[in-house]
Length: 212
Image (cartoon, rainbow, N blue to C red; front, side, top):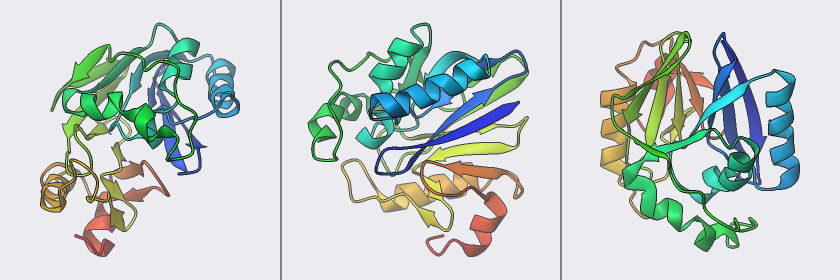
């Protein structure tokens, strides 16, 4: 298993590439907002001889999806996957692009496959389990990889913080419930890879997260 992280755009979004033994890989959160950032990600894929099979979107906020078109062009065989509840927000990404300092996508690529709670995605020797974790944004998911004992949490859970809930579709109590019922049931030594900031562990957040 190989894991790469690229920090993208002015919102410092973590985009991740997770690759299996046979070089099949997923790209989690296509957040690159310009050609330079996109090229950096493509170079990393090519240097490691990865094959991007899926582009997974943890949630549809503009800072996490503005690279979707560029990366779909770079990896045309990759399947764009997202929870269906996020579709309306995803299709509005360009409406927020200029407000957030991004260049608009000339077209918003369609979602190729909608993912659902508890779905398992296979990559050679790896399994990715989808955990439906709304509360920050419509259709938010976290992605658990048991072989690596790690979970990609998007903007649901951060190191000693949680996602904001004051945007459309956000709900504080829902977010807390999802963290307790979906994420805190994972092992305490599970590594948390958030959409912004540094990694942490489930055990650390149980003990030190002031929101929980």
